[in-house]
Length: 256
Image (cartoon, rainbow, N blue to C red; front, side, top):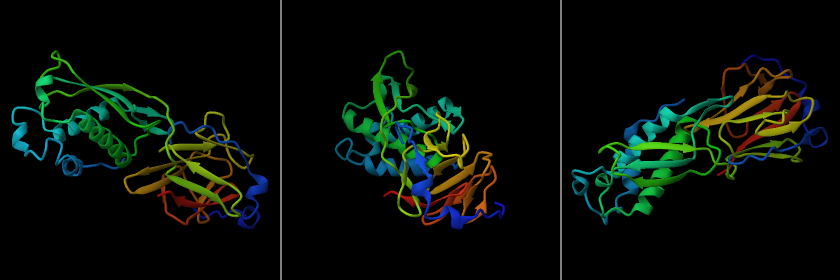
């Protein structure tokens, strides 16, 4: 970040007057995650999946942790590049050989835990999701044993906000629901701000693991964190930081 401080006194306290905010519907709101961590978290939640059975019950079949791990690996292959960054489908069809799933396993609970695994992994890796994760688990004798096949599509659905940009005078609260949200003046932005201070595609905000990053997108008037102008390299932003888009001033806040 380079130090080119805007005239903050003009920007502070005037956002409510200067900001004509048009919120494009956020239909829906790369750090490496180890499969060991994913497996440990999932395994704890799956302790009672088969009435407390030990892993030995799954001998000759696929343990739920192995299913989740292979599913996540499949998502890495089908992730697509978008202007906002890597994106994965949220409506997923998962095919397995019926002999790989133990009859004692509660399939509805297994499906829920696989959905949790995809959601958590997306946050860890900084993947973009455009809606709630839904998994349709299917069995097919044509699928080879030990293989988890996955394909899917993007289905837009509302996601709760995970962070906010609050105008300094409290007159505007910009809620951000999508991970990897593009903020700008253009109609195709995830969060649209109709104000000449803001460029067409002004900046990108996203979270990866337990950190949040802000990246300028070659904006005319600049993106600033605590008075320091950002380059196109992502920079971390934390709760309480002052964020300025041109001369419009906000405070960054996490939700929950």
